[in-house]
Length: 373
Ligand SMILES: *[C@@H]1O[C@H](CO)[C@@H](O)[C@H](O)[C@H]1NC(C)=O
Ligand SMILES: *[C@@H]1O[C@H](CO)[C@@H](O)[C@H](O)[C@H]1NC(C)=O
Ligand SMILES: *[C@@H]1O[C@H](CO)[C@@H](O)[C@H](O)[C@H]1NC(C)=O
Ligand SMILES: [Zn+2]
Figure 1: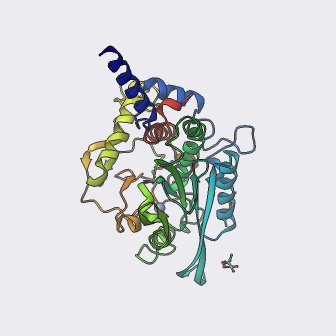
Figure 2 (figure 1 turned 90 degrees about the horizontal axis):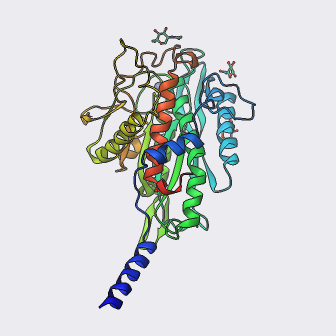
Figure 3 (figure 1 turned 180 degrees about the vertical axis):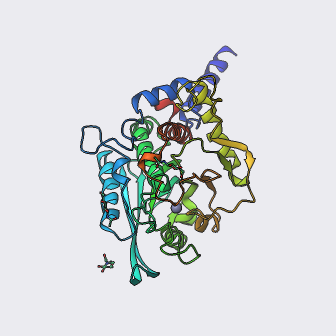
C-alpha cells in the first residue's frame, strides 16, 4: 500500500512536470519585478531625445507620417531597428501593397502602403506548420494628412510605442519559458505585433477611404492558409485574440468593453489594472492631494458597450470572426483629430500606466509569470 502511494505520487509529479504551465496572471511581486527590470520611462517620454544609450521609443514617432511619405518610412525603420535589437527570435513580415485612393492634395490614383508584422516565434518554429496561435497586438502608425502638421500623438504614436515597450519587456522572459518548457516551443501561444498603415481616411472617412492596411491584411490572411495537423487553417484563424490599441496617452481615459465574446479578456485586463493600482505601481493614482479624487480605473468591465460602433482597424477582422479586444477610450481624447494631439498634450502618467497594465496582462496571457526576473 505504501509503495503504491509512493509510486502514485511519483507518477502524479511526473505528469505535473510534463504538463504545460498554467497561464496565470502575474502576482504583485512578479509585476513589481517586471516593472523594475523594464521601467517604461524614460524611453516612453515624448520629449526623451533619440540617439542616447537608452533608445527613445516614442519621440521618433512624433512626426507627421502620412502613408507613402519619407517620414513614414523613417518610422518603419525605427520599428525595424527596435525589433532587430531584441534578437533573431523576432521575425518580420512586410505586407506591402498598392491601393486606389481618392484625389487629394492634387494627387490621384494609387498609393503604396506597408503593414509591418513582427512575430516572436519559438525556436525550431516551422513557418509551414502552424502549431502556434498568435496573441496579436495592433496599432496604426500612419497619421492624418489634415490638419497640416498633424502629429497624432494619441492617434496612434503612443500605442505604437507601447507595443515596442511590451516587446522589449517580454522577450527575455519568453525565451526563458521556451528553454524551460518543452511544450512552449511545440504549441501554445506566440506573440505577434502589427503596425498598421493607412488607418486614417486620406480625404473623408468612408468604407473605401479608411482602414487601408487592415482591410488588405484581413483579406490576405483569410486567403492564405498553412498546414496544421488536422487540415489547413487560414492565417486569420491563427489569431488567438486581436488586441487593438488606439487613442491612448491622454489623461483620465475611460475604456468600456465592447464585445461580449471578449468580455473575459476585458475583465482580465481590468483585474490587472486593479492589481497594479493596489500594488502602488500605477502612477495615475499617486496624486493624493485633498482636492483630487482618486483616479478612476481606466478600464471599466461593467460598462459593456456592445451596441457602440467604433469603426477602426479591428473591423475587417471582426467581420471575419476574429475575437477582438478594442482598447479605445470613450469619449475620445479632447485633442482627437486636431493639431493639439501632439507630444506636449500627453499625460505621462497615462502613458506609464497603459504600458505597465498592458505589459503585465500580456505577460500573464503568455504564461510568463514564473519567468519574470
Ligand atoms: C517629417 O518630419 C519632420 C520632423 O522630423 C517634419 O519637420 C517634416 O515636416 C515632416 N515631413 C512631412 C512631409 O510632413
Ligand atoms: C509603389 O510600389 C510599386 C510596386 O512595388 C513600385 O514599383 C513603386 O515604385 C512604388 N511607388 C512609390 C512612390 O514608392
Ligand atoms: C491639449 O488639448 C486640449 C484639448 O484639445 C487643449 O484645450 C489644450 O490647449 C491642449 N494643450 C496643449 C499644450 O496643446
Ligand atoms: Zn485617427
